[in-house]
Image (cartoon, rainbow, N blue to C red; front, side):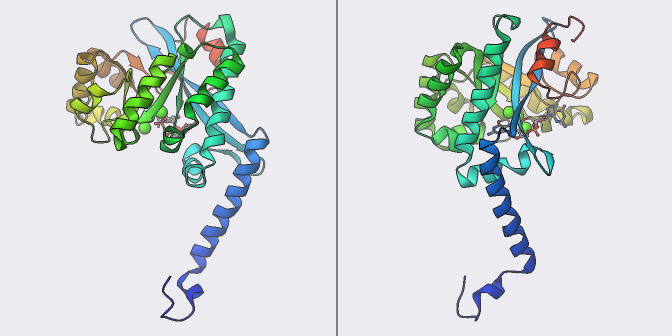
Length: 278
Ligand code: C2E
Ligand code: CA
Ligand code: CA
Ligand code: CA
């Protein structure tokens, strides 16, 4: 702050002070929540419309706050990233996912996987790989049950670094999906260098399918995925028309409210056993 104009405190409006205070309280709350079992993981099924089966699920965190009820991730993930609390938070999510997978055991189809979102801070964390190994070993589940979702922007930030980490994850048997694909600026050449397994078409493009706008982008992403031998998942599918537009163009892996919202692991187990689900 500039000191030449007198009292530096006057540079902050009442509103800014209130915002800073709320943030401060939220940060303390989040720190406490991590120790108090307030973070819950829900699972959103990903359906293969050809096989008519749930083949994956995305883990999505929820904060059940004691006073404020269920807080959605957009309200606390960026705060967790800025304060470094995303590191213990992601570990907590990984532990819950692996424990749920272990508990579901034989109820899970052989090649069923759960995908876990990682933020840029997690990706740059030198302890990421040791943490993943430790959490998998602790739960006693194979790495092949897990996929990580990383955004295009995070992967492209430092391509040399990303290449090394992705190769190590692949060596462990953990898969990697590029999340929100199409919203960043990755080129075909970059994508070929990275050991990724899945492209996730961002919800914004799926939305635009209705007015014909998103079709070119969706077709390009599906074509890219197929030519590189990658899986392609469409997220945010809400209507039968969107499902048909995607499936007609060769995208058979569908995630969205059309099939299911994020649900508890018990509900997921029931859905996996319900032949009428898809
Ligand atoms: P994302 O990774 O793009 O996750 C998909 C989001 O779209 C989820 O919101 C999901 O509930 C929502 N969604 C799925 N299908 C539909 C649909 O058909 N219509 C609509 N309107 N929405 C749909 P959610 O759970 O609120 O998560 C928001 C974002 O927060 C996620 O976006 C992800 O970036 C982040 N996030 C969630 N869980 C975690 C986590 O455990 N770790 C990290 N680092 N980030 C997370
Ligand atoms: Ca995601
Ligand atoms: Ca996404
Ligand atoms: Ca998205």
